[in-house]
Length: 102
Image (cartoon, rainbow, N blue to C red; front, side, top):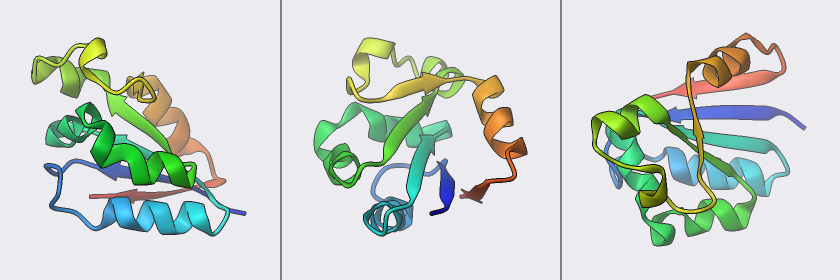
């Protein structure tokens, strides 16, 4: 199965990418949904993340984006992993991972 990194920068509720992530994960693919920019606000709502988590997606939040929006780690859902540029660069350079960026 394929691995996907889906990078979401848009505000919550304005993107089809979370639905695509659920579909891919449901098909057996490994999916990481990374929220950057205003997308990090979605990582504060357990309700918004529930379909992703139930499908087996990993949810990441960019630390710099969260800090710039005055979100602390404990403002994020417990299942959300905070990551920085090193993790993103590693994923972008990994030939096995397909990247979708919005």
